[in-house]
Length: 483
Image (cartoon, rainbow, N blue to C red):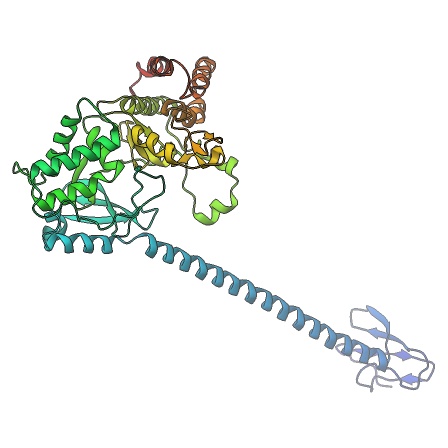
């Protein structure tokens, strides 16, 4: 036998069946062996490897490898299908969200339609006002970002020359939520029908006086309010009110927010009325809204618990001295509308979104649609049918009690403006309050919230609590730059 080359692999296999030489190319298993042969593979390093194999074992290995390949392919296919499904689901949900957002935007934001309606009537000579020329001819008043929350009440940021404002426009099919003979909203028969052609200025004054008397009640200075309305109606300041200007003024008088802006035009906590055209009007813009809180996207609103959201709202607020100054502004606004020069008004929406503040942290009323004359509220509530107290609610939080024997609501509001304002300010003021002030402030806030509209000497208690709260807050910030 030829000695093996040191560079070659020497194979010596000893089996029961016989001897296999190095001429055999590779160790193999005899098919006639009843047992797997013992193999010894010797390499030049002197290492040996012993193992057993048989034709069936080799087949088994091949089959196992094939099965592993099938399993691996199946697993890979499963992963691909899984990721494909997740991708499809993400695309579907994303498309649905975009569609809903777009549909909501197109339904809520109809500023172009509103502008076209107003300008069409202006060009036909039906309406006129101080903002008509800038809106429809010069193009110096234009719509900005949409802020609308209801399709019929269009709200946009806007610019009028160098002035930043907010444009509010009522579409033709708007439901006027005025408190008249009923609490339910009612649609005007036809907008801009009144006053009719041939109406004299004196007759128009009588119309305005009668309307205001129904709104704010019999006032000693009602004539002064009528004169104030006519001054605002004179859009071009030529000393007389034309028929188109009168039509615009009459349409605006149906809106509580405009009436309040005229009544409180000399106060600092209501936005100034900058101009109007028909029932479109422009007020000054409030830089920071809402009063506090975080506006979450609507998908998150559905999943965030209400209690956690209220706590989250308090994290996004100014420093406490600035919150105190803003709160004093709200208390002053309550004082302005409580037995003001032209009657009392009820603030029926104390939510944070109704208020904002300026760079100097002066409070401003942002949404005054639910600030209603108390006289009109009382008259409407007396006509409102009810079965329980929940039927006697106007706006968000102006409530009365139900007289079940009569089946009608009581006229007296359950809580005055001050009590509801203190309820809105409680968490806002108590978070971050200086420790030495907390007990006294909390005591006064709860005393304020306990006020009832039907209590004896309510007006005296109202004034006392209001002054005590303002004094307490001013003492804490009067020495700071925030004052």
